[in-house]
Length: 181
Image 1 (tube, rainbow, N blue to C red):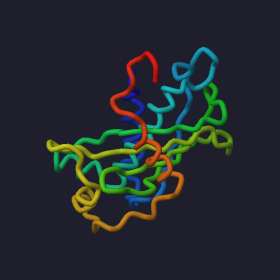
Image 2 (image 1 turned 90 degrees about the horizontal axis):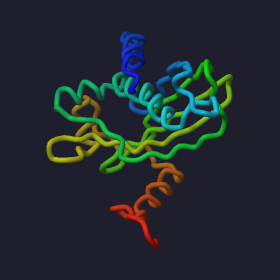
Image 3 (image 1 turned 60 degrees about the horizontal axis):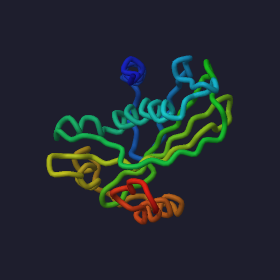
């Protein structure tokens, strides 16, 4: 089940937080509850992705994106993700999450998020996100203009993000349906 009440809590906690610039970092705090863990008594990998929503959506609000979405009847979607897991998160661990937009291209905004427990990084995720409208993907420059930000040039796309997007472009679509590859 989606943690709707936890998301509402995040909006409540950050309702008076100062606005953020596009590439500034939103820091939030969470707890790994017993219903977040798997059979190995650690944070479930699927739940990790859901918890990252709890940082990404308030980041969008503080950066002014949520207001632009509402005004233009746009949606926000994840078009791809890559997660690196390095340390276990156990029940009742207190998590500090860092969320920031890194860069964008003609179609997507790339967001990096990380989880930290007791000062140690536990996971790091890269999300390729898109704003969608009735005609498909809305270009980030159009979105920035709707946010009241001059449609500036993206910060330079880091090599590791470029390599990931290049690798993703080689991946076949639609996916293979069994048998020999």
